[in-house]
Amino acid sequence: MQSTSLQSSLCFDLHCHSQASDGVLTPTDLVTRAEQQGVNVLALTDHDTTEGLDEARQAAVKYGIKLVNGVEISTMWQNQGIHIVGLGFDHKHPAMTALLYQQARLRQQRALDIGEKLEKCGIEDAYLGAKSLAAGEVTRAHYARYLVQIGKVKHEIQAFKRYLGQGKSAYVSAQWCDIETANRVIHEAGGVAVCAHPQRYPLTRSKLIRLLNDFKNWGGDAVEVAHSGQSPDQRHNLATLVNEMGMYASAGSDFHFPCGWVELGKNLWLPAISTPIWLAESFQTSNL
Ligand code: AMP
Ligand code: MN
Ligand code: MN
Ligand code: MN
Image (tube, rainbow, N blue to C red):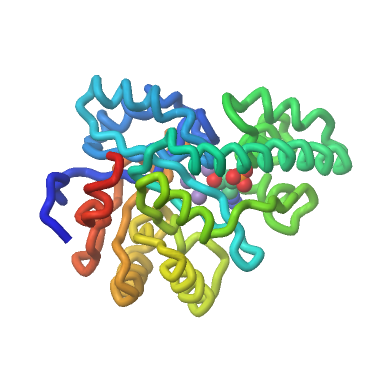
């Protein structure tokens, strides 16, 4: 590990979304908000796309924020969707563009299939409705927002509970790539691989340990130790586990839209025991 041009005193937020996937703000407005919130280093990590990065970079240059190239890759592991964040890679690298092209095709087909299932539940034209809310590919979050808009559910969480969540009536599993592939492609493109929000998956502790072991054995670099929706105790527990396993820690809000409970750059402290990914040589020498 080498010492650092990226100081720990800076505010890092290495996970958030723009309109390029299921965020509500444009990349420019997202970076503007990050600057207002005191973020110094921001990674835009849209779901399976890097389409927002060029616009975000222009805004970041204007505001003097360091923008890290990012992506949140959807993977499947033991029949469970797992998100792998790539950071600091070359977003024009052919291995990355090929993987994201494939993921986008899966997403398009899945979006159509979800629309058909909702049709069978008596909800017509849901695909067109969700598509009208999306600037890029249609995600389940767009479907959730559409279901709220037409009054089928009260809020997005209810849309997942009733229709879109795993095993529900409009759930469609996608053949996302595996973790090994995501890690390999991120590395080939010069970046580091981070296991996103591990405490948000419905896994027992022993299964979570198996996931992190597999992730590490497949070349994973870091785990998002600081993420939203955790208690301080949970964060400390995760930090201890990640430290024992010899992996770096990352921090990301997973901000999607302005709301009362998640904010860019907020509540992303790392326990003292953690070694932040931004101190890793692999991160500092990546395509920042
Ligand atoms: P997709 O990548 O199309 O499967 O969509 C997943 C996205 O939907 C996640 O990144 C979240 O933004 C959102 N999401 C997933 N589960 C929930 C939930 N229970 N409540 C609200 N939003 C959710
Ligand atoms: Mn999302
Ligand atoms: Mn995620
Ligand atoms: Mn995310």
